[in-house]
Image (tube, rainbow, N blue to C red; front, side, top):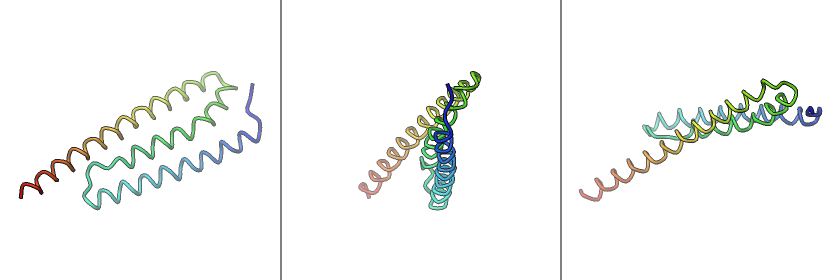
Length: 107
């Protein structure tokens, strides 16, 4: 079973969208660094979406080439890893915000 030309064209557009998402996330991360926000999850979140948007294309390739499933599995593992990093970064930022708020209230 193979993906038809329309599906391949759509997955190509998803690749372009994935690149845009990763560029936007990189830009937001740089902005966070400039604003001295050390616990910004933007880059991790954008990489998760970038990886997930690539999966349909990888599945199409995997339907023709059995070794392509390794790529799908690797992409899912990467997306899971970046999801964990994004969540941990978010929680750390919440802790820092709470700590800062407590310090401000004690003054």
